Amino acid sequence: MVTHFLRDDDLSPAQQSQVLDLAAAMKADRYARQPLKGPKAVAVLFDKPSLRTRVSFTVGIAELGGLPLVIDTQTTHIGRGETIGDIARVLARQTAAIVWRTFGQEQISSLAAASEVPVINALTDEFHPCQILADLQTVAERFGTVRGRTLTYVGDGANNMAHSYLLGGVTAGLHVRVAAPVGYQPDPAILAQAQSIAAETGGSAVVLDDPLVASKGADVLATDVWVSMGQADAPARRAALAPYQVNDELLAQAGPGAIVLHCLPAHRGEEITAAVIDGQASVVWDQAENRLHAQKALLAWLLEQP
Image 1: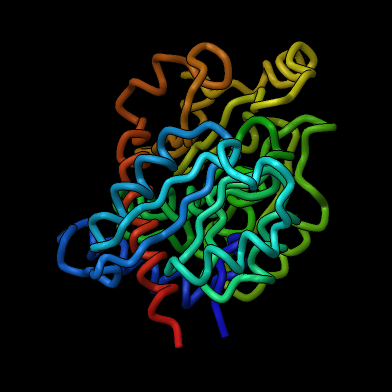
Image 2: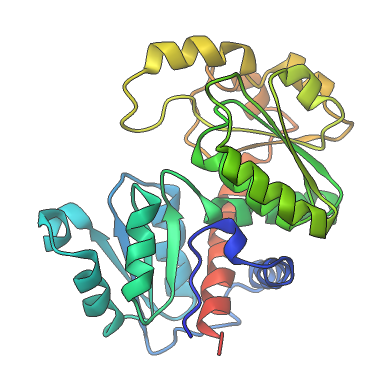
């Protein structure tokens, strides 16, 4: 049976730990493991613009000994209405895995249902699970362990990053707080699933509307852009989310030695100030680099499943 990674809770706590341990090992020795030697190809599909995802998967697949087949879907029949099932059947016969950065979660679920090779979610509107693996690796590097730490996500709580922090964070045993205004809070079903997982791992998941309260004593502050690609309600969003900026005042509420995460690209002066993202608490460049190591580990782990 093929194993896919479509959302954060596709990995059990033990499996997530295995991937993160492998990521640390791969960062320590980038060329020691080459499961794609041949080279075997990995298809990396992009429906949306990308920098970090494109670079990290392209470099990572090459370092694993493989051939990164990077495809802009708008230049193929994918962008002209070819069915997802047909796409999966064609790619699965010629590649070792398929990575897709797309829109709705139903798209990638349909691809996985028809694919005989592992499918990886490189971002959908609902989840960004590869980013969260890199973020967990970054937290572990700074604190030595992830379990028991508190991560506060501030901003648009209804977006893919907030959802993935909830699911992936509690899987790792984190205490996850999402601070967001009414109307921008997480999907209740995802929050409920995170709380169910947390009951097994010792983590927790809560949603608050006061960013100062949510940030009190946190080990990690995280945020993301307020206006994502294709969203037309930018003025209303900025007005609602203005009190949720990650700035010096908010950082002062966090615990001693707290770190700041941002998945990038950042809009300095909007969701985060330049002083914070460029300051001593920021680990965003380690975080961006760790996309490479975490995704290499994920690919290797998926390919080695029986």
